[in-house]
Image (cartoon, rainbow, N blue to C red; front, side, top):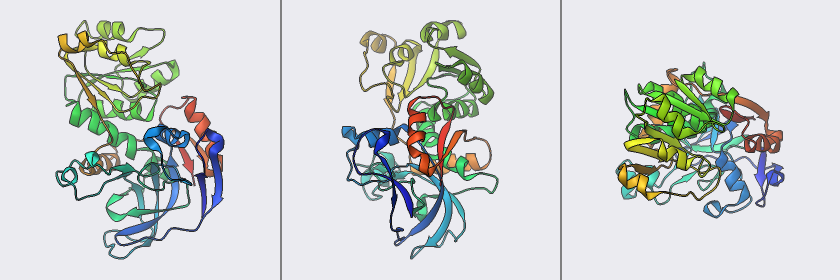
Length: 343
């Protein structure tokens, strides 16, 4: 099969075309003929070799895949050859206390395909456990099927589970043009909340309005906290969806009303932030770290996407052979929604 591999950590030049043997499905697994794989910033971090994602090499990146079932392993009964599916990216042990309690995203052995959870979707074939195959409606393209699992699952856990988002609340979405941002706007609106979207790009903010954002903040030059104060009549916001890190963290924290919640799942502008503890204790704020979501949440997200109540947004598609260009495009943060490889 054709694949893109990394044999050493580094920049986009570390991505290398390769011909590899097709994997074989084992007990309870299916062989997926991958048709599309979406990119995530996690791909860049793994490629770069940051300490949190040191993995054996060579390695196939790609956390978000979709395609059709090419072969069934022993014991598979709920899927059939030719069936169109997206892939739930999380992998857990299934037997630890966290898994048995339904909190599988807190499993000590938790991993994500394309990162610490085995090979990913930058290849023509991928072995997938049957329970992680998410049926796709015929109306959904493979690119759309690859564009939703990781980010929509992540944001569901952030907003619905940890953030307790609901009607009448106000949600600030930082980095509104990202995959997380696109999902957060839609999920907050689905929950009945008011959405304020922030971005460095006016063009992305117009697209955010098209997804349902009620108000927008162009920052810079606008000050996020001051604009939130003005847009809410001084009430400030209930929940900040944050994955950018030091570039916006302080502003997001200062935008929260007393008892507000900042939920973070990433740090694309760096690993460290300055934290004024006076804001935290005087306003009784909550800072909540979030990682992926549970298998049950993944099924809920898949159902809502299948029903058309949530819409994956694909910004641009590259052929597999242009994975390097796709990585460069993603790193430039020009996209609104997901960047996808067609395979």
